[in-house]
Length: 266
Image (cartoon, rainbow, N blue to C red; front, side, top):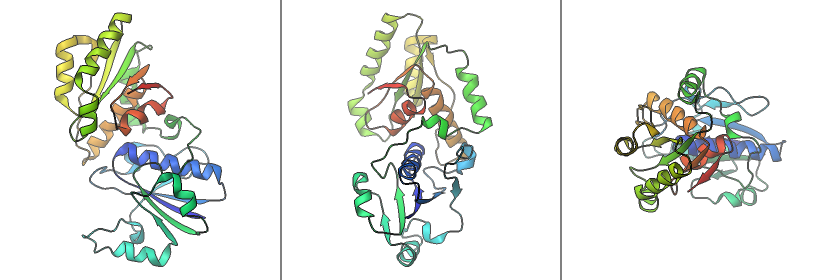
């Protein structure tokens, strides 16, 4: 089988889709896998702006530039790419299709197009994600500058807000206040790295807990290259904490924990 994978949506959704493709190829090494990174407004950068190429014998990530048939079909391009795919691919696995049914639905197909915003098959990668997705030297230096002296005494908090209604409702600020108080009661030396898409959340916690709260200045616009670079720095700093308290329905929380196999409590 030949699979062309075009991951889409936000950063961690895309990385999950790539990890899913690599896991499938690990199980079925005869599979030909092509990964095409599509620069769009919700992740407006090239893969190479954020990460080194995948290590070892893993399938490399290429930029989706000239392959018109592999672009998502929209009203802006008159769905021409989708029409071209009917001529090239035997099957298209698209958003909304259940990941657990990929193998069954694609059975017997030779050329398969996958456009997904998360994992698309049952298989899971057997490697720590931080070993697969290695930030560029520029970004790794920024991460190291923040985390160098943590020595296991920093707990991670990922507080998802803005457009994530489930996180706002089911992971309220009162929960995180309780977490902080509990951790300080266990060890007064504990500090907290706070990753959040809401600067007011960070400001509130700094006012409440002073220098126990670690935050870094970030551009929160994922429509910019700088915003995406900052998102990677924030993600890897969160993943470098001793354990993570995350938000409901947040891929960012779970992905940060999987970077270096850390415990996550949601």
